Image (cartoon, rainbow, N blue to C red; front, top):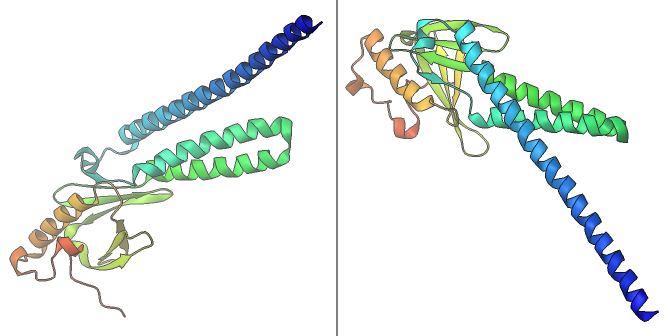
Length: 219
């Protein structure tokens, strides 16, 4: 009897280990599926970005290869949230409405971030720049239209240089954007050329302090 009970105990242990291994295998498979979905969504976003550029961005500034774009983390977060939203929605179909609603909210946030990343951009060459934003017509400006700038420090320590234009519009450039500093250097050089100013005489110009243009006084 003792031998038989030990034999049964070994069987139960092996069964328990088999169940644990099966559960772990299921978790590993779910993780792999999530990674594959994320990679697929990211690839689609990349192809959409390239296709969107070729289809709708055919001006000289677009073809220059120089641009200010939203930080890539917006695109990455957009993809991740979109995938998580879809997963939560699918799980919620069988488990309850809370996950469905939460999944839809997360999905919407992910789509918003992805659309913002794909649609925002400042494309420029040596003469002018083109401002592209979602839901708005592209606006083209020459560097000579810049009248000054204001400087802000936002939460997290990043710097925002807000450029003021002759038509009353503004262009906000955050230090975390990709390509922002080469654009500001090009804009300053173009501004000096188009307004007839000598760069050496511009005492306000100090890129080390994020100052490129005359300061705009508070009204």
